[in-house]
Length: 175
Image 1 (spheres, helix red, strand yellow):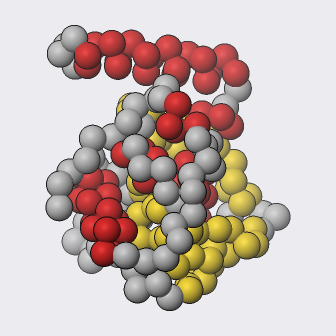
Image 2: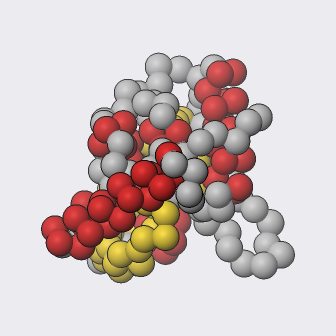
Image 3: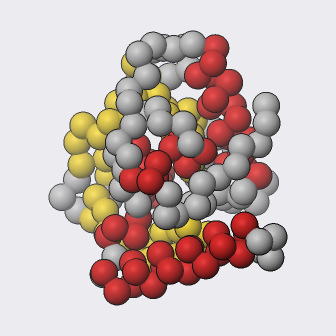
């Protein structure tokens, strides 16, 4: 299970709508394991397949942040939101593909999500709080959308310029 490199915005793969996975396979289970390892190493609470350059509808997440609490890793294949509350919540979101940049995003407070699990079985669950924000953020990735797309244009441009500079510095071995 290797830790995979995480793509940094701007990258055209982060703006691409991902393909559904046709059915469960050992390769997809290994992908989910690699993604969880990569997410925990980053560290983060969610990761979508396009963030590691895989254009498939797969995401992982674990929103347990309390010290000493047992992790609750989840792998969702072909997730989709089937219902969302009218009530909203605002979270200051960040993204592993946009390091050290944050912005307040308003999203539905509760969402009902359906997906296929690691064994190919259909699942459905209502998410709320941080879990709801995270699953919506990661599904956005599968649809080619970033959290900065919710921000005002000037703020979005400023963050994009910072990420372009970070990528140049990394390419020169300075970061």
